[in-house]
Length: 231
Image 1: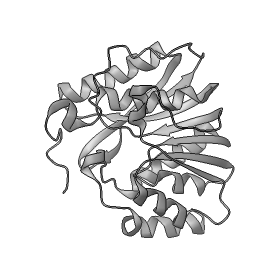
Image 2: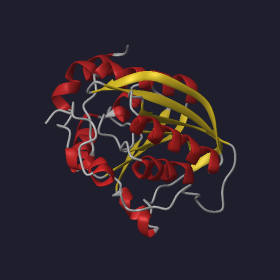
Image 3: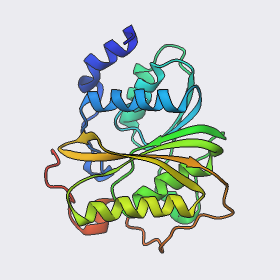
């Protein structure tokens, strides 16, 4: 581990903003973020990456593995300020402030693709997952890789969200290369890591089922889906 990553690991919990339940943010142990950065760095290799949502400050860890230029799409100003303050000096980091719910009205963040890979940890709802992933797939080059966190809880609800995400990937030009169970843990909830490769571009996004503007868990189920979440 280089000096930057070592220092980042020690200060992670001090600089990471408190999870905002209105945005379905979760707390995660630093080892899970570092493990994911190592996976992406090893499998995606050097190049240009897109991080869609970054309340885990994942992009800081990935920038610690040199050879990657990152664009981050984020709506939470607290996260944006933490990224700007703690990124390596001179790091190739571009931040685009955007609310991804604009996709309901065909408004998408303006990013300069194509990208070689993407990483995302979406809200754990069918529409949150697919809108985050659609945002990334639109700007991913054919042959590029995607790394997606999906719920791996012992419940039918979590299983359906993950299965819907996989159906969406297959319907939109993706080939699922690997699904790693319990790759990370967020507040007691284990998460799959789905690794997908884009095989083709599509003319239009196939949402698999009609969108209903239920983006967050409290909109989809009228409750906080996981009672273990910290306040």
